[in-house]
Image (tube, rainbow, N blue to C red; front, side, top):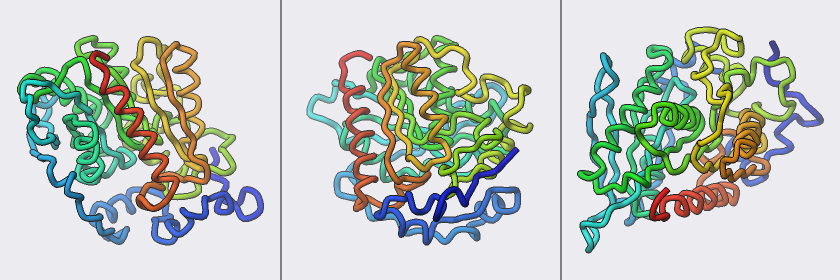
Length: 336
């Protein structure tokens, strides 16, 4: 087993980072996740807090309600944040919905970290956004978080009329570990056949437990923010076993799914220096080969978490525009 090669080529990977994103590396954490750093991060002592930009007028107009919905059988209720645009003149008209899964390597995070972007999605696309506060690993192993997401999905589908949602226009998406949970949830929804999904949005998605555990790591990916060692820790925390082995349940990692036919249209975006580059490319290739309409984008010079550079960076602008346009096209259809 080998970790990331941080000295690949003259100057390592840093020379490949887009100039506009280089300053971000000065304040992003550069440590590997483990039990000790996880405790420090959760305690708020490992990373200096960053001030979130103030909400725009449009974002402030979006209602945000915290709800606790029935969880999986025998499990606690699931907390969700429900974002709803202002009432329209035609109050009887239904809206599409976007079920969002937050990132955090399966071990940290909550829906609040995406508050601004979820408000923007609700405002710009006139849709209801439901963001899921799923249970984190290692306290909750697979399939706990996946079942939390499914509980939120079935609640959204069941309560569609009360929420003003069109049941035929429900999309699922997320970033990083949230993208992994979203992809797994789409596969679970296909298998159970109770809730139709019209679209999945996978942003630098954490799809494959074998990444970081193979003997031929990408020489330029995974040096910044989320490393191969962190990836092994995140997957080990979720699985309760060593990742990358034959013992890993196929349902636990979307990349292990044998059959991708019948999945909804998919949007995938990832940075060229992201540890998840190759697993995202491979998932997109397999989706296309399975006849799934798939849109794929690779952002040059971008590493995992580059969006923290803010809206002034052209790479972030491009990512947000591509994501928003794809989600808009999917949700504006009269039927998915």
